[in-house]
Image (cartoon, rainbow, N blue to C red; front, side):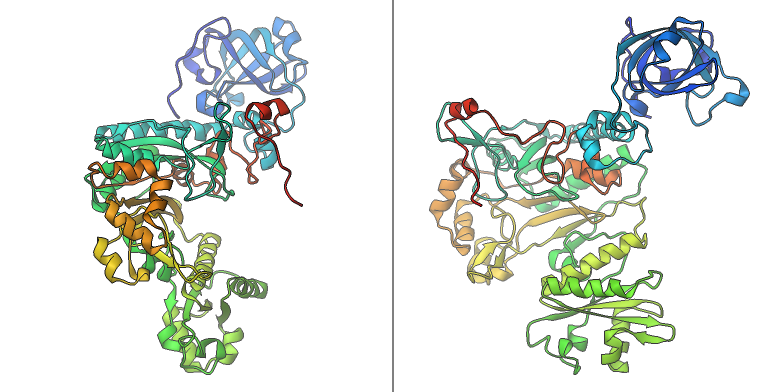
Length: 602
């Protein structure tokens, strides 16, 4: 239980009902809260009075209301979730009526007076902890959802997480700085939220996608270690681990720092968070995986390392060495042959395997399977591989009787993505991941560039302002596809918690890096004038990262959806069902901003 806030003693209450215990028997008390439940027992009315904040801020206590008392007339006909102030005397429950499920279960309050502070209409859904309520209703009536308990408990822990972060980073010499919310639009990254200016017709501010440029400018300004629990805004679609519209991140930047310095500080921070927030297990230093290694072994750059099931490489073993067309032409087409073992304790109907083949087709990959049944192998590959080939496949995948083997043939990244998603699903369905473990890992050595299939040119694969490994020499001497960047991700339990990088602080290297992607120096100067100018006045080398605050809490709380750790989230369609946003505005408001609405083209 979290520490309860100080109690304001006034005309409404002098005790919290959830705090009452046997030592309070005989005390006269004044309580206030919501009517959570009522039970009429033939001449006696039993009422559960819930404190503000639910279990996170108090609890519930049972009131006994007698017909001859003043409280009866007030409470008997009052709807649930109305707010009342009650006076009465604490008494001990008889042994047979003690409720061991409640902290207050050994006592009750004989109510004497009651005052209605506000009355409630008929509720849109029951405000009970374990009631299954659809998400749309929960978001539309978020304030009622909070009264049910679990959400408020997570908000209390969210507050605690912020405290742990601030205390730890402050002890490590990081200075908390608030950066602007109204800034300039950036041409890179996701879509900006634009804010029109009434003072400057036709000109716009933008809400920051991240404080990236500001924190780098702080480094140039001599702030050696910066942090901020920063609000960020991106006009992008929702997904389970990303809240649309806005989110928070623990933004860090360090001057005169290397990649190793960032890793050391973040591992210290995560260790402090885990110790301060949970009883789960983790250990530093965190393992490191090269990007290429993570993709090849786990099918993703955010692997869940709480269980094995690594993807097997079979290109050299089976590719081109069989008459089966899907395998025979793989090497000459530049394709890979990869396989994944599906443990035998998973009952997989034929339609599950057919679903795998359809998913493969959607990714432009050929997918097939083999199942090692006790009576003999079955599945498409069982009929088309020789015994020797089937043996090589099962040995490489470490499969045994009862297991199945999924095979993907195609381009490296789509084949990896296909098997990586199957690995994730199987791990979840079979409960292979220990819920008591937090498996942190670093993914490093991301490629600096990727080939644009449409133009044939090179695009930045990730952050264009990262320092290329090898500097100018690498940009000059290596094929762009072979240039790696000092970029790194922190992942945990299959969730990407953060991306970061050693920054490219030298204008000469920056010009060369952008030139590979087809951008001239003028593009940098016009798009990022403040940063470009600052980098001509003695910028120190610097590096940083920004772990997602909401995502960290989602992982700590073992929640599948990030909306469960946010007080007032947007829904999957990026709409605020509670406040009704986004919404049209009046013509007068548009005129003040020198704007007009152009309907979308049908």
